[in-house]
Image (cartoon, rainbow, N blue to C red):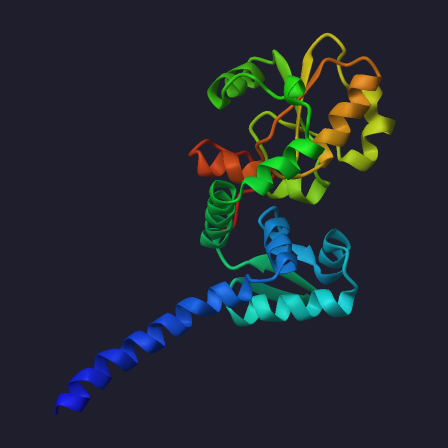
Length: 231
């Protein structure tokens, strides 16, 4: 009886923690974390994810199979193509919590970021509520430079979509008498940095917002949608 009393709870704990560890194992790859980060912006095909993560399709598929087996992503087939999405919003919350913990634990992250994003004078200085009010009143132009599909999935209120690869061609449509605030996928995405640099070179008054949709949602602020979000 004593052996069973000990082995029963032990077996229970071993089983539970084995399942908990599956998440850690699935996200132990930098590429898989990058894939989750991109999928938090909206559904993507295997080919799109391979391009984002700079992988060949075979390797991207292998990473996605691991994430799928751990129930972090879902998949659907459309003809010969397979599209992936996050399983639910808790996956994005997990990614944000993982990122935040790494930022607190590793000073190297701040050093790397400063080396690449050394442009504090071009960052948005006012808080999110002030930004939202200025955008609502039309005092600034909030510019989403992510791909159009990501904008349609979810975007900041009152934001205008001009993907980075279309920005130079569409620049003339932007007002020169208003400040432009460019944003993309969050603090480590380079698209808004590239956009603000390009616009500044052409004489625009532009700031870069480090937030993306995930940060906005995590702060409890509203988002806008081209079509109603899926339940």
